[in-house]
Length: 205
Image 1: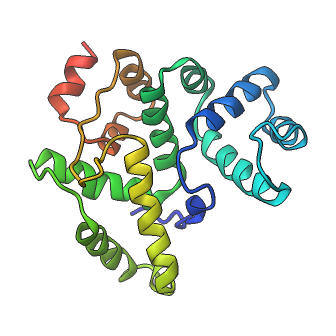
Image 2: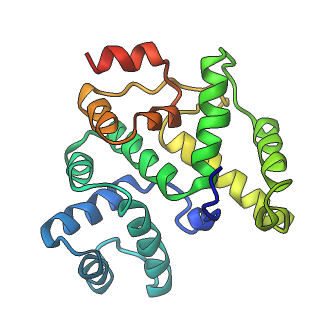
Image 3: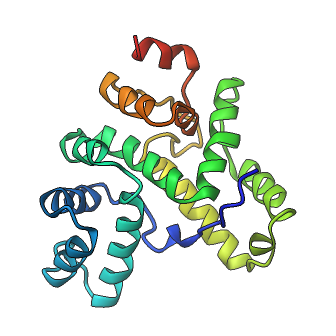
């Protein structure tokens, strides 16, 4: 049983922020030090944030996600096309935030492989209620916080293009290179995506 605490700060950035994440990854690969990278991005305001406080909040959250990727994955993120940046950032997000990782596996992936093509607020609410029954932190969240978590979850799924504006699940179309990167780590992480095992097997041939 996974006892890792639920980290719910993913609402601080509010979305994937693909270009910003790629920029931070590129700076890290140049320095090899997250502390130096974070300081540089903030001091030079490389994300062009309006205020220092918002920059600190967003950069801190993006670094937290990107630290879950190894150097090969970070390099892939820098070089990848726009769509694949999203897929890899979703991997980092699911690794970083247990809540979203479990939602991806237990709801998004499960609905897709059982040929249920939609994912709506009712599906999310059922998932949240089930988790909250066994987790005091979730159970104590205010309605406004619960709403923000759900809103951000759906926004991220749309940013990754795994869910349409009509709440239709969109299959992940991973490249062979990205599939091999995932397989080199934990093959169970393919379950973060709406994808069939047969398609994964073909990619890895």
